[in-house]
Amino acid sequence: MSRLRIYPDHDAATPPQVFTDGAAIARELAAVGVRFERWEANQPLLPGADPDAVIAAYREDIDRLMRDEGYQAVDVISLAPDHPDRDALRAKFLDEHTHSEDEVRFFVAGAGQFTLHIGERVYEVLCEAGDLIGVPDRTPHWFDMSEAPYFVAIRLFTNKEGWVADYTGDAIATRYPRMQPHPSARAD
View 1 (cartoon, rainbow, N blue to C red):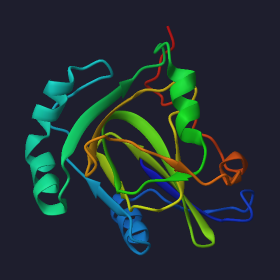
View 2 (cartoon, rainbow, N blue to C red):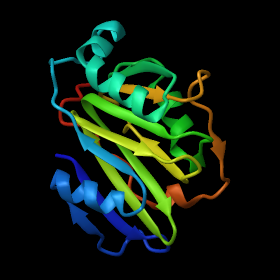
View 3 (cartoon, rainbow, N blue to C red):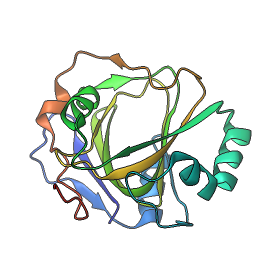
C-alpha cells in the first residue's frame, strides 16, 4: 500500500503523520510542489520485463507527460533481489542529493521509497505499482529500494543524459528509516 509519512527534519523518532489514501497523499505532496498520481496498471509486468514492452504498456501516459511537461527522454529501470549490483546501486541513491531537473518515476511493479527534505519537514513516500511521483528540481531527497530491491519503474527526463545527482553532503538520510523489502521480493 502506498504511504506518506511526514516527520520533523530534526526528529526521526517523533510519530509522523501517516497517509495511505492516494488522494490524501497527492493533496499533502501537492501542497509542497510534489506531483503524485495514480495510473492504472495496464499490464502485469515484473522485474526483468522487456523495457520496450514496459514503455509500450504506458505509452499514452508517457506521451502526455512528455508533451505537457517537456520531458525529452524515457527509460526503464528494473531490479530484482538477485541483481548482482543491487548493493552498489542502492548506495548510489541513499545519500541526500538534488537534480537540476525534475525526477519523475512511475512504478510499474514492486516498490521504492522516496524521502524528500522540504523546509523543516521530511516526507517519506513509499511508492508502489501504479504510483507516479515527480520530485521538483533542486529538492533535496534520497531514494531507497531496500536490501532486496523489487521494482520496475519508468523514468522521464528533460536532460537526455538522464540521472545526474548533486550530493548535498548532509547526513540527514542516515537518521530516517530505510525501506523494508517489498512483500513480493524473493531472494533466490
